[in-house]
Every structure is written in C-alpha cells, then in structure tokens.
Length: 184
Image (cartoon, rainbow, N blue to C red; front, side):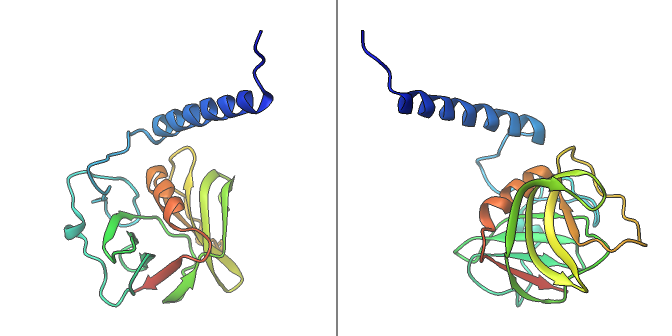
C-alpha cells in the first residue's frame, strides 16, 4: 500500500481552501470578476457603487498625477484610479472619505492589513495605509458587510471607504512602497 506524504496532503488542503475562499469572496462581493475590462463607477461622490456602463474615458486620469504604477486619489471628486505600469488607468471608482484628508502630495504605501475594525466599529478588509495628517492615519479600506461609513464630524477619521471589489483590486496593486498620488 502506497503512503501519501504529509506535504502532499497539506498542499491539497491548501489548494482546496484557496478555491473555497475565492468562491466565497466572489459571492460576498456580490459580483463575479469581469475579465473583459476595468470596473468603473458612475456613482455620485461619497457613494461607492459600481456601474459597468462607464468607461475609463468617462473619468480620465487627472493631469499631473504622476507616471508609472500608482494609485491616484482625487480629494475633490472622491475618486480613485488604479494605474498600471503602462501609465493607463485599469480601474476607477468612487470612495467615501473620512473626516480628515491627506495633503495633496505623493506618498507610498506604508502598511497593509488584510482584516481589522474601522474607526466606526465596522469590520473592514484590505486596509492600505499611506499617510498621516494631524496624527490621524489615512488609508483605504472596504467594509466586510458592504456598508458605507456614517461619518461623525466630531470624530477624526482617516478611513477612505471603498466597495469590496474595488478594495480587493486596490489591495492587489498597492503593495508596500507603491506610490499614492493625492490630487485636488
């Protein structure tokens, strides 16, 4: 009788777990990934919902937002662009900012956390931090329940909330050291 090595069993279980997690992530996001192109949002500012009918040309990358691989965040539009090595936006979406904005500047991703709790007490995922302002840490995240933050103007919060699918895409692009360009 042939014996199966423990390494083979662990590898098989790991593959099965990753497949199950991928299926659950797609179900939790409420949409299957679209291999045909970028996900682009047409929601009004402050909202973070997607519309597949928009193209990246409808929300062009801001002038003077740098070059190369980067995340571009517009304070005025409450919009994020994910930009690949070619300098072209691969995805754009609206976000709901916290009460503290970062200054207009170029930053780098300083830390990442897969899951945590937001300043509003909501379970969050794909936390990507890149700045501080007045002692408040600023970063992108998505609520695991898909909710948007109820902003309390009396609290200083630096969380920039995005939809789960957008958060997953930003997480894949924005590793430690990736540029984040904040524009007006």
